Length: 277
Length: 336
Image 1 (cartoon, rainbow over the protein chains, first blue to last red):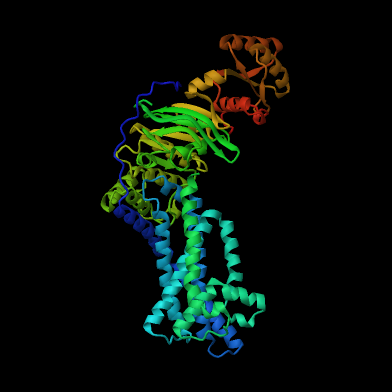
Image 2 (image 1 turned 180 degrees about the vertical axis):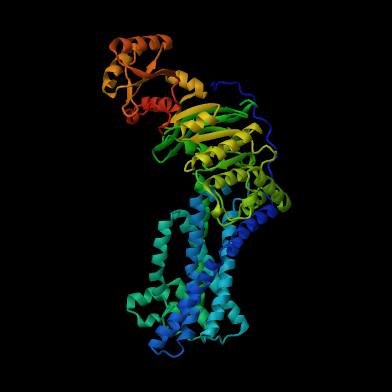
């Protein structure tokens, strides 16, 4: 076959459709909707996701709290479990993204003239929705095991806001890790590695009871900051303290997620945009 | 670029670090034709498809698809192409219909038109009955057909996208699924779609492609119609089936001399000898005579065109020293 043909100028391009905010929004909604249909398709998994933190709650409150006969442990533990569940949300974000990458679905989205941002925005909108719902279920479960809040409605709302703020930050950590790892084996590694992070925190017990170095890590753990801040807002016991990190928990609960977002949001977006390199 | 070219590739290069995936690929595909891309693993087939479908940016060179530069005007290209990757790129949990409607919305058809198109396409690809089932319940062939339907949902004209990229479309499918995909592709081509097809199955290229480019180490090493490739790169062959397996070796040297061939391939199980020939009739006459004189009985003697397998191995063996040990199988049944 001859490749030496005379080449007249390229045909006049058809007018390019300008990306207008309406289409971008519509694309994001289409992507979110896709995830919501999944809920209908796998109700068992949705229920399992919601009951996992509930199981942990029951286990720690009744078996460990009961075994160690600590009075009012549920008031200490339950807000910690809220923070833990929000932080662990990075796993579900990572899993979903890794699956899409491996099935080639992301390739198809990238070969379609849709808004570039919709894949990740849809993902985060859905994950936030799911986590907000999960949080409601968790709050109700907390009330069932005897946890009560004593703060004003405004303080309670602020506490819930801080929890979702942490979730948003962890979501983008999950997006970045999902894009970088891209393989199910890496997801498993992350699923194991989150546990030390969970235990080196104030979720289950006060850092002041831990050896010095571990207590310092636990004190500065972003999850601890959120947990302590929401305990204060809910009017629940905070146990220990005296360190700078503990005394400024609310500040860290705002700053830590902001820092994580400032690092991982641009990293994730750049990683996604540069998939073509 | 002429108006008649759907794909124009000039000196296309892609490097990953120091590794060259494409090293100066040239290719011209006229409108409405099927171009096959053949080559061993790592030859650059998938890289070429990913660049042409805007998933990957080239390191150098130029590529135009449906009249638009893939690097400078990717969105224009995306409006005019369909991509069928190596895996069915579908949401397993959504139904077939929901998948199509989702992709239709992402092409900005609007909910109503997306739904109508989805219905049409399910009919057309014989998936209407399974339309409400989740894709996870589909067979491999059904998934591939739905995948193809998803390639078509956004295209501006009824016949499908102007250019369709198929990256190993039937890998992992059983023969029935393969047949289903082939007939779907044929009907698209009838509608005027240009197809770029990569495959490891030579039979697939032989069945579907008007023109085949053989890739090796990131560039085209041979190109032409399946017939022309066979003629140019592999001479015709003479096949002889010997009755007595004990006399296979004796017969091989006679056939080699008669056909003036440097090498005769042997298939001991089937008592089959095969050698390339230049002068068809002389080789046939001399082979018959020589075997008769030596008293070797032949069950069958036939002249035939080479298979694409033989062409493929011959072509890539001459350019890649590592593949030089490969000997051409005598039959079409071998997989590359």
